[in-house]
Amino acid sequence: MENIRVKELNGLALAYLGDAVWELRLREKFIARNLKVKDLNKLVKAHVSAVAQSKIYLSVVDELEDEYRACAKRARNSKISTFPKSCTMKEYKNATAFEALIAMCYINKREDIIEEIIENYVFEKKNDEK
Image 1 (tube, rainbow, N blue to C red):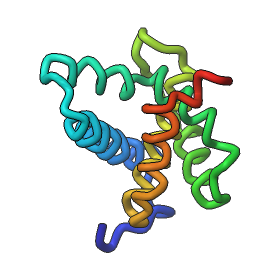
Image 2 (image 1 turned 135 degrees about the horizontal axis):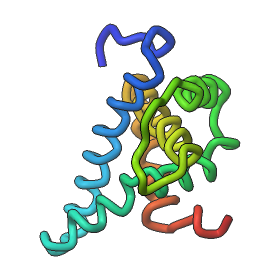
Image 3 (image 1 turned 180 degrees about the vertical axis):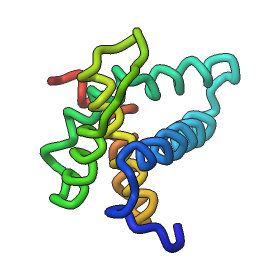
């Protein structure tokens, strides 16, 4: 993305962008696996939930480079006044951090990090081991 400086963006704005990027990447991956259309939405929705994103975030946060970890932490610490009933506030904040991380990867053209997360934590389910 042109002319976007991650450090100047609000953490919630990053999460907003990251949410869209994450869902798009998952849709691309699941479609590429020739899954039935009726199953696509169910599979994608299972991985875009705050609970699922929180689990992935907790699995990857310690492996992140410092600037990516700092960006995620800034988003996680953003003031959030409401959150869905389907998760806890902690899960929602972790999901917000995860989405900001995805946005930062996208902005910095580090699609390799997004791909690695998808392969390791969506398809191989490494986060289930913790």
